[in-house]
Length: 302
Image (cartoon, rainbow, N blue to C red; front, top):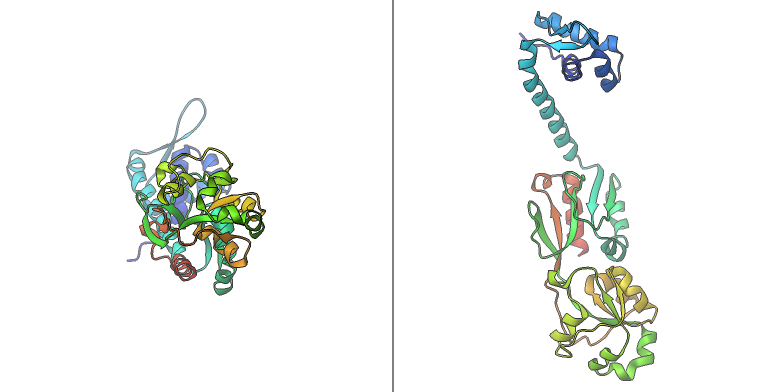
């Protein structure tokens, strides 16, 4: 014999037991108290037992019977499993919203100039960008996938390398024309206006002017003066406007170099960053079709 499923009645019973009131349960479920009472009554009729007693004296409240109380943990666990199953069904769809966590600089200089090609290829997927600089909990904040800059070791997350990065000095063509004689010697950089990127602490492995100058055997002295900005995209703008020499990250500066807004100085001097860009996501989300297509698109663009 097939057992009927009284999901609405069970919801009404669980909410009433938790609030000890049909009225409070009705507010939560957005129905009338009479409807809640009727649902509970239908469940009692089906089970052939009383589920609640009313307290005597003072403000009346519902008191679940001992048998009802013993069943509540299983009923609540069942609803939790149903919600989890629904979430899994939702994450398996190839449509809907895909939430991507990235830095503001990466969004401005790399992702946004390219995202139109993804939206044209997958118009059924809506991209939501989370550019919060603070560390985020993927589950709590609803992050599906991220592009992070670092060494690839984020606890509880899968990290796949997307792009390596090189660091080098850049300036505008106007700045180069003005100082081209001095710029023939890399040591002249110590006497020119430098633009510093303070996006990350040097202890994280982030390449600074001091790191680059030491790596290329130009100077071991710290460079104190110059414009300091804590955004790798913003660092490039004053360089584009001819205000100095910036230490550029190759991924951030790629489009500006291609268009001629910036020129690279000393191309034979190499300095690879120990940090790289990684595609990052939770293991339980790896089979989401919308995540898979976005991940593949990132790889193709890189």
